[in-house]
Length: 122
Image 1 (cartoon, rainbow, N blue to C red):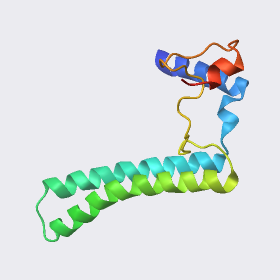
Image 2 (image 1 turned 180 degrees about the vertical axis):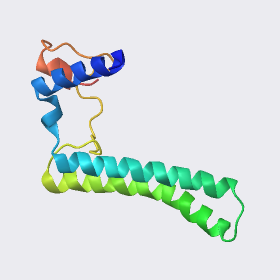
Image 3 (image 1 turned 135 degrees about the vertical axis):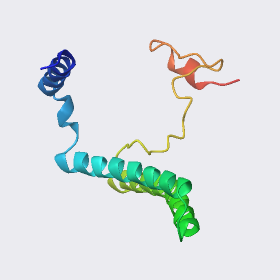
């Protein structure tokens, strides 16, 4: 067995012991892999349509370019809507308070700072 495979198997075993790999269900992992494969195939098809010359190339290239833009946006919207409907924080969640925990000059505030000093702005 090559050395790098042994190294990665050790990392995998340690992550499995800590429970890190159990964060997502098997269905979620399968859906993620299907999405990754679909996006990669879409990018490859766009490249093929752009390089080779055949009948109907223009329509296929345009539709492929539109899908290249729209599919990731739709995936983001689906994840965002899932977070809204289940009231869970997802990777697509919009956090409106980007400055929480930061001082006026942009530095991260200390945890032991008085509450009135962190909330007052002049």
